Image (cartoon, one colour):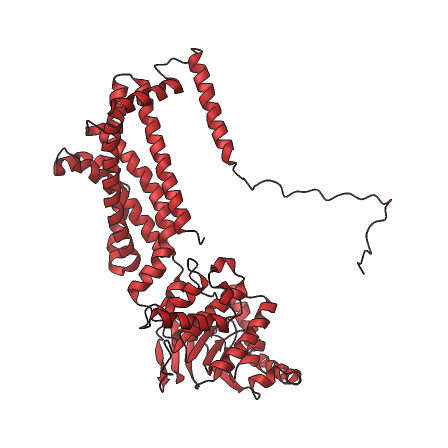
Length: 272
Length: 257
């Protein structure tokens, strides 16, 4: 029988306990962000069309879209974009490969750790773009110094995220593998690599932004083609619609890279 | 194959953890190691399994392991130590990957280990989808797959709730009876020690020394019967009386640390 003893009588006055657990669980709505963005663009467009904002200082979104369209049909967009993509792609790959190798060495070897961390701590804070003139002196005025600047920027962040990831692999998993006499190479491949992967992929997000930042900066300093060079030229000629077209293209590129990394995380870290 | 703890002492820097611990685990014998918190039980197990170099003394083996044993001394960990990115069957297969085995042989060993632990239906499941008890079953299954001669169990039930602990204890009794394996069973739980062990090594507080070795005067099958409960309880009381004062001191020491 259900024990109902102690429940109040029907006519007895009671007060309900006030709910105090609301809030602090922010849930993002997928379309909320897009609606807000569309709203800002609409207000921006309306203000520009009504003549409330000088088009020279802030062209309307429709003018920016027109500029992108004209850039696309003239072929200039692909010329600039392909130059930037090549620099980012090669620089990022070189920096990432070297960063992963050095990061793993620091994470796994006492000698590499003692030497590597000292060097990384000393060199990481240097703004890599400051090295571009030196790199031009060493490597000439072609693509190499721009690629090297990006590679350097990517290298340090990757190395740090990789050795932090290796350090974060639970030691009990490594001891477990050792207790089964699993060889060193297999422990690295089957335990440390997957264990460090979340940190490595998080590092990719950072290095993608670093690469984008450096390519634009390097192209502004010394390039004929590339989105950075295009934005600088447009600024010099006060073609603000073209300038913002370049900025929008950079933003879309950054967004696309973020999506790719998100997809990689979903595929590779589904076990989390 | 016998496992011998031969005059093992260990220090972590200035801190003496173990002092001249010696005992032998015979083939098929289960030896429990109990003692107050911080007396070096887990350190002793790591040393016995070759995961930690003792400051002095050594773990030694006498005789040969069974011919089919792929890893004679095999750990079962307190925190399960499962690869979270691998499925149950991949976890169980993990220690077999570097062995000279064909894919079919590996598969047979994995299947057998999963069957013995009742995990066959969960082979494609990831650890995060399993309860604590099931995760420990995966850890046990992985240990069984390599056909150990001696299991080194480091508080394997301490992270589990009491009902799951009871169920897994029954599994241990069955597996230890089936497999002819020996075991070193480190625990702070005297009931587990009394239920599973043939002998119980009682360590003093840090630095851990052997205070007494208590022989359990019943077979494991007899211990499951109702009539044995009083005897087991008396045994637990006897062991508790050996370590009670030191356990209180050790507790105070931890609080003041």
